[in-house]
Length: 262
Ligand SMILES: [Fe+2]
Image (cartoon, rainbow, N blue to C red; front, side):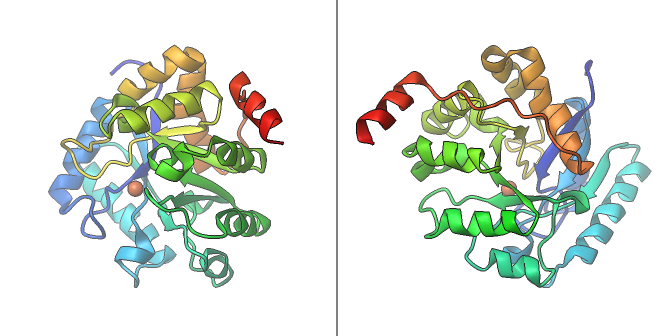
């Protein structure tokens, strides 16, 4: 795979913790698929609290380190850093206060899992409480939320107030159907996407792969913009650095609707 090294911000590669890799062998197959696609750094982001309540930040760090060493022993030179996909629940701010939240590679960026149907009540309040605690929520797969598909204004409002959005590569490829695919493209057009990640669960149909989605995104935001989504931005997030964000470009029709409904 030619090209700059890519960073995958969202994977379920840690074996035996959730519905991702079932074994070390499967994690190795995922790492091999990632390297074949040019991905050299992966964040392991299990559904930590929902699936394995006893697994805390220190345990995840140790597991990511141990996995990276096992992969290296198999000749797979991929960097694995710890993280988690935190459930978007009303007690998330309290989990942060209690030191139970696991950020991406110890940064101030927090990957937050959006439900596919039904947004939690007080969604904005929860997220802004997270923000007020000095963390930047990154919303995982907003394109797969039927509620957000119907409420683009809410998406704009969230981004205006400092949240980041991570679209799943397979959504752009059409794996989850026309709804998520079309909405992903719309989010890209309106410059509401900050990262494309694989959300890989295995080495088969939900494998770590970013280049196909990168090529699709390049047709919408240009090659440099697409590269930022799979390389620069995720790398800067894992290095706890600020992002250079292009301002959103709301569609004219959306402005018109806002004027009409105001
Ligand atoms: Fe995930």
